[in-house]
Image 1 (cartoon, rainbow, N blue to C red):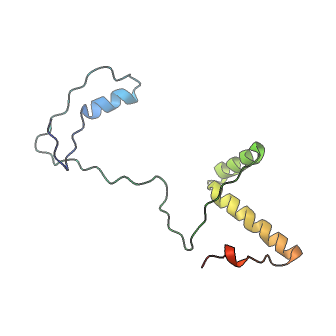
Image 2: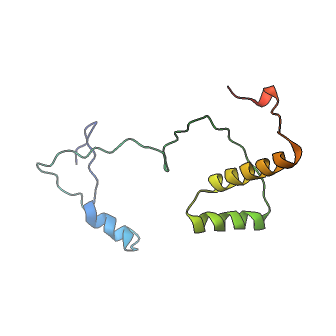
Length: 116
């Protein structure tokens, strides 16, 4: 089994993979597959899971602590609507701010919290 800088040869081939999928412990030895005239296999660059992070405006990260019942409701709502927790929380906060501003007037954001 040879290995160049850009070539990856996977031992065991599909048979080895299927043994693991079928619940076998992998203690059985598998022979590497012979590669004859096939082109080398190039693995793609590693990327993070999920959607690409492209936003119209920059976002800020925060962490919150919630009551387990509230978190359960959020997760249930996300699951039932097929949305992400972040979008549900953001929409809820925007709705709360809108309601608060109707009763109490506009919330003034101090200069130190403004991002330009």
